[in-house]
Amino acid sequence: MAEQPLLQDEADQRAVLRRAAPYLRPHRGRLAVALGVGLADSAALVAVAPLIGLAADSLDDGDRGGLGLAVALLVALAAAQLVLARVGELLLIKGGEQVVRTLREQAVENLATAPLRFLETHRSGELLRRATGEVAALAAFVRLHLRNMVASAATLVFTLVMLAGYSWLLLLVQLAVFLPLTLLVTRWFQRDAGAAFGGKAGAEATVAATFSETLTAREALQTSRGLTGWTGRFERENTHAVGAARRAVRVENRIDLVSLIEGAALVVLLLAGGWLVDRDSVSLGTVVVFVVAGRNLFDSFAEISQLVGEVQTARTGLARLLDLLAATRPQGAPTQAPAGLPARGDLRCVDVEYAYRADGRTLHGISLDFPEGSRTGVVGETGSGKTTLSKLLCGLYRPDGGAVTFAGTDLADLPEAELRRRIVLVPQEVRMVSGTIADNLALVQGGPDRARIGRTVDQLGLRGWMEDLPGGLDAEVGQRGGNLSAGERQILGLVRAVLADPAVLVLDEATADIDPVTAARLEHALDELRADCTLVVIAHRPATIARMPRVVRLDGGRLLVDEPAGGGPDGGTMTGPKSAG
Image (cartoon, rainbow, N blue to C red):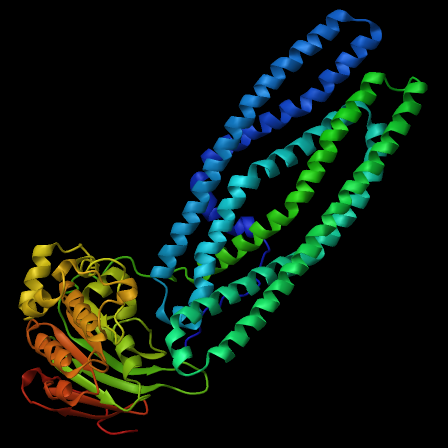
């Protein structure tokens, strides 16, 4: 069984910035400028304290000239800081949002090309939460908190350097009271923050996933009277999410103790400063500088402390998003098609094996040839491996053993775009997007215009059916195609597939759950396909299978028999055993 990457509820938060570096690198110029302006803003703020100290000393000495100079410099500095703060904030927000945009686009691109087995392994609500919710939380952090975080950190460092230049003794007294207790509280917070905030994010994602499944399975839950049990499950998960949120709040509240430590440090500073002034060890202006700058020092610590929770939330979200990006990153995906790869060719599977679980195989050594232009029906009981085979033939799954090739090239060696151009699957449940029928039929590479859509509809003999729809091509399909019947969606899925002009068209139970009239219309449309289009039809409906010149039967994941139903050279040949092994 092929290993599938699994997302962790509590994603690894170690070295988050290093892992995010590839997404930061394209924006490093903008971020560097924003950081430079932010540092200049913080330096201007820190410079206020020395100027106030100069004014205090000038006033104490009766130096009016020095006092006037200090006041003039303070006014100029205030104006400069106002400009720097505004410009720095705008630049940092723009740079941060560019990074968030890059992450969002990469997440969408990765999920769009992620292996089908990965998408099937994870709940859609969980993937949606990571690709949208975590990105939205990061964007909110960038807009509301990133600038304050950078400014507070820079102000803290500049203030410490400046105070050390005035009086290392007073700085040591201040830090001796403030720093150990603050670090102790911070360490207490960090010890449980990762688990608390990670658990909160994971619990919220679980609730979102269950709610998403509730909307999808609403009809089944109501008709089977399973809504009560499902609601109980939702309530249990919601209770767990509330408990996880409360735990995160309790951990975050530990940071409030920093305010008490700040008050104690200020009292000690005033006592020590008064004693040193009395001994003529420092000037009055120096004590004023420490009181004013101490305010910056404490405010920076307090700001950082208040933002620790926001930072941890953003860090957790970034870690979960990076986990998603890493799990969905294309692994050595080919970028160019092999030289000489034809537009049409034979499809072949050789000794193909596949397993969903380690304790059993779904397919056992299947070997089949589908020559160019052949028509083949695949039949078998439910669970015999028909749908799995269809996904392997389309390259949506990769075999655990053996190979599937097109024109002699392993599907694993084809770029995604080239593979989808040549092999198209029409699943049993055709998905529609909101909009008109024309909008849905245009979801093909190259965006076919209405004229081409019309020609394809005529080619398949569906002009009368299309004109009978209210609005024709402009008919609204509704949310998830709710305005159309299952059969109508299947027909549109076939039209959309034919518009892609594939070399191989695979239909998985296309006529299984539709009325006989619509099924017959779809079967007639299949008869009108281009002669060089290879057709593989998985079906239970006898009338559908009867149209196929060749029928392949599966039983328990093994090739039971390969029999020509209608004869003819386009029936194809079998290269594997004709009976169960």
